[in-house]
Length: 495
Image (tube, rainbow, N blue to C red; front, side, top):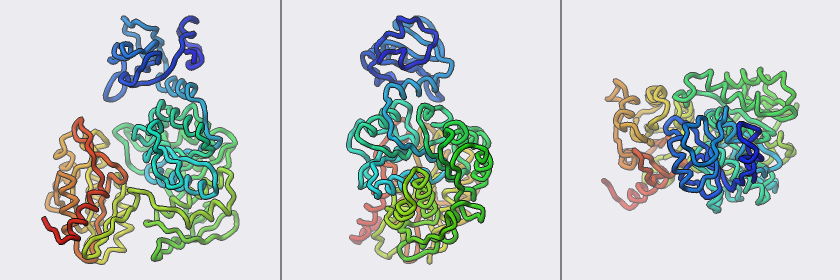
């Protein structure tokens, strides 16, 4: 593809626009012969420092924020590097599913996207989801086998990964796409070239304030999906039980979109009347369009049932009939790492693995299982390094308010001192916590400490299968470790 077809008219000569580009990347290590290298000054690294490396690998042109001279290939200066990068990727990989639904919020994005994919597929619609769990479009819900469809592990992948994956999904026949939209992805214009047909909002609570600085900036990033990226004629479903959701809904009332509210509030278009616990999950009762509906939902945790109902509403806004949208609720399957039970404790103690990694999410999970705990409620968690430090103390306080036994361990400390992160959580209440840095040892100790009627929540990593310590990323899976410990205990083992 010609360079002039990837980038809008900018400060480059016509002959430069005739250069043929065979690939795009912002990672100099991925550059091959004929590619465009995009030099972005990020928080941890500056792409401009790797221009010579990119050229050595075959880059035929550079798109950057500043030209420091000495470049052996054409250098194009961008006034908005992230937007131009996303637009170039969007043009290089142009194919799209015919329906694209984006879900944003602090908690629940992954669940809503996955449930929406399941609902579409139950109606025999060719569907996929892209987000924290990777790219998924099989009926089983497993991550796609094609290595070219892997993503970076980010909630919203970088522009080159995002558009490459979406293009390949569309090429393979996917017509309906559920996409997790992170605040970073929205703020950095990764989604700008997409046509978002429907947008969903779950909730907003403290997270990522190391990047957004305060809650209003964080909310503004989320709201941009609805206010700027969702075009006139689109659809939106917003949880108005959340105070920021109510604020967003009020901002959207004047927009020319199909706007639906959801929540327990009497004013909600889809009003959740009751979620009554049952042996299998919940008996859900809600009203919509003047009609009453009642369905069994075989999921653990009220917020997961609420996520499922939001997904059903988004399915309806995407064009699926009410019968198929709501009728799929009883068939929804749990998601790995989201309220995922781990069975096999010799004394029938209950164990749950969940991705809860914010104060609000941790409070929700512990609050839900508190009423189901006959003995002691234990929780195990840590906080990520190089991330919002302000939430660490709040995580500790959330655990203190609801749990009887609290294990503090490591959770992707990255470049920070793991002991310092744990101390940020514990503060001056050392006697209230059990501190075990090694996460495997902590999980083993927590499980071995359980008795009949006890409940353990292993929080923070959920579906993740790696642990990043320093600059090394090692295999680690909370569920697998827990099952291994339980197998050992089941054979009569003890530490």
